[in-house]
Image 1 (cartoon, rainbow, N blue to C red):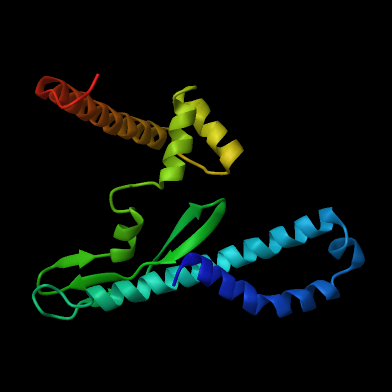
Image 2 (image 1 turned 135 degrees about the vertical axis):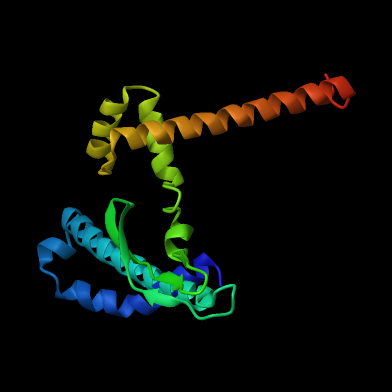
Length: 192
């Protein structure tokens, strides 16, 4: 199933409910652009929150299904937990079951690993916005601006770590490109 098919199916199922709901709204909300914008924003926010919740439950059940058995063949103990994240200007709580093997003394939290929280990772959008700010201003000012413009709280030292990690990846990428360009030039594979 494609994303377009999924969204089309959701909209098809929601059409009769939406029209019934919309006809019950006061006139100033359903017939004025400002009222429509406000109402649709609230509906979309609640839908987004509900979709994140469903996705969280699905990821947690998938983690338990795939990783309940340890490499040693024993069943792992489960301990329910959760982690709160700020995504797309919303606080989202992800269910994270911790799986532990008493025989091997090894634990795993697949959902945290999948979300990139084990390594302190951040989303690409967050990384891009933060490095854009930190290249133009100090880390402290960038943190304030990140909170103000993106609604995303971040620690100054985290801003520094993320920026330097992006810089290291950029340096290695550029070095690789220069190396490939030099190799092509010396081999005569490149025209011009």
